[in-house]
Length: 308
Ligand SMILES: C[S@@+](CC[C@H](N)C(=O)[O-])C[C@H]1O[C@@H](n2cnc3c(N)ncnc32)[C@H](O)[C@@H]1O
Image (tube, rainbow, N blue to C red):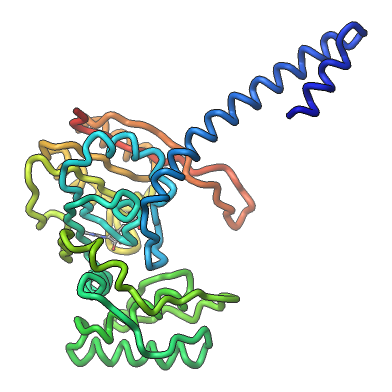
């Protein structure tokens, strides 16, 4: 930046007046951008100084949204935070509320958190090796088949499979067996001691099931991050189709307290949320490289209701 100013000065008094003016404009906009970026990154740094790192890899993780959400949550942090679709817990672990109600339809995920709350330490070796991975996957499936899905052993294996399997996916075949292939990561930093979570989770309640079975209190702050709307399909992969999107939006629109609803900004989602009285803010998701090499950022929407 300093170097560019010197360059701009050196153009003064010569034919390069226009050039100098051009450079100043470039410099000003670069400086403005730096100020905006550093405000967002300051906010991110503040939040991250407090935050606890999510223990799992989880598809659709929203750690990147924290700087956008911080403004709303900071005003409301006396409330209980409810995540009806809590997934990898990126947002709740980012904000560390005193009280929280955290729900997901995935029972293995919730079993893992329930054991973190009790104090989980893994004693079984964790190895980033194909043969070891498939042996542990078999062990996990044997536990599911023998009604031992809620044990600490199942929670420990779930963690290992999540970190070692392909892309942190959690997928089951039609017979209910976990069938994610080996992930082939170069290195994995496993953790075996999760006792750090005991005090953090003390006043957090974990439940598993469909979101609309949650019992809410009128003054709860809800952050809802359902599976993305998949445009042009009625029945989405993962079992969350258009009817579920509508059901979730209508359920959230009935809540009396503050709600932030996040989704992919497809035209039908924007129309639905608007028709239910949400205020919409479109934001850019982090850049993704698609298989066609298209790096344009995906648009996401934060839909708000009942801010104070
Ligand atoms: C986009 S992910 C949430 C990611 C999370 N916000 C994070 O940062 O890691 C959506 C979650 O919704 C859960 N889910 C899908 N259908 C559900 C339902 N009917 N009720 C509750 N949770 C559901 C999925 O298991 C998944 O974990």
